[in-house]
Length: 342
Length: 106
Image (cartoon, rainbow over all chains, first blue to last red; front, side, top):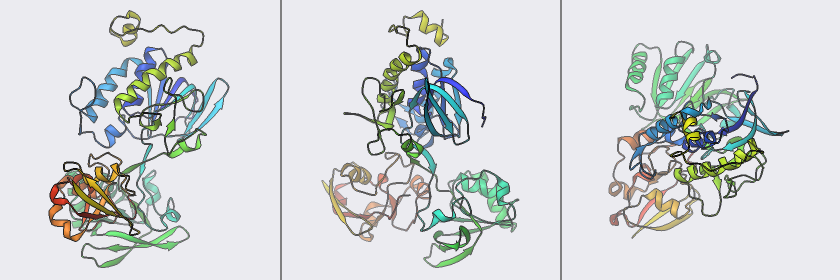
């Protein structure tokens, strides 16, 4: 959240496997990087969508889970000391003399010589229930995340969902809210059993109410919610008065601010060349699932390859006067020193 | 080969051929059927391949397992016929299967 200017060689947007491996390839060539990701931890889709699912097509690893792959990559890139900025998203990129100036949604400014977009399927953002007119209530009555608990003090709050976010915020906001109702489509929860237990105790003691059903209609005016219509599992409907609604339906990937950076786009993908994986803007590269070129395959291994080739071009930008000599990690004492193994 | 029909919210129908062994989601994506996002690629991790199975096909397609039922919590407008199409495996017995695509996957 710092507003002090951060100066670095490269800013990598996205801490998925490809963004992480870019740290490695850039690091071998002495290009220093900062990594920004909207999630609260590294791994991207591997961490968010399938941490426990086995992946079978990583070369030399017959089977590895998304989380293991992420952990291995974090270990592999550790020697390069890249700095991570989680829970932040790059909002703007501006061309400046000698590179780029980037600012995150939290206001953190960066100045760098090159940008590597490794944003995969885009930025993970909370799912917005497709309820007619929901936009008019967003940030006044409908919230997809809690930034300040105090905003809910003394309010009638309706939380919708049955996952960890829904349950955690039910427990956290209960002491603050005037009244709190948890609404879920069924009486089973995917959330941690301990949280479910605590929630049920609050229901028993009369501190919160729990109702079964799904929201079908929003009521209110001028951005101020007054209530919602709920369809119960038996098909009947009822009105639930509330001032605030917090729907928690997980995350979805949206291209997000990338669309505003003036890059050529092809159906939400960024076209690149296949020598440097550079976009239509010199010095801005795109690797991994977010790019497109003839023959593109959305595979982690393709992203790794792209990271290696991109890094060659990155070196020329950061060290225009240095000749790059190709070296192997198996034999180069110089590379081994960087890796901390010699 | 099994024929699967997808019905869009506006009533448009799209019938595709599916190989036994693939999933209904894969059959949709392979044939560019609109409205099946399948963001996670079939890992039962995103709930963006939600469909409503037509009444006659509810029994042959079976019931969601625990993980799928949990994931359906992250879909919208859940009905008793709701399934995640990545969890329905195509078999020869499903020849003629008809599913409806929701208004929105989110």
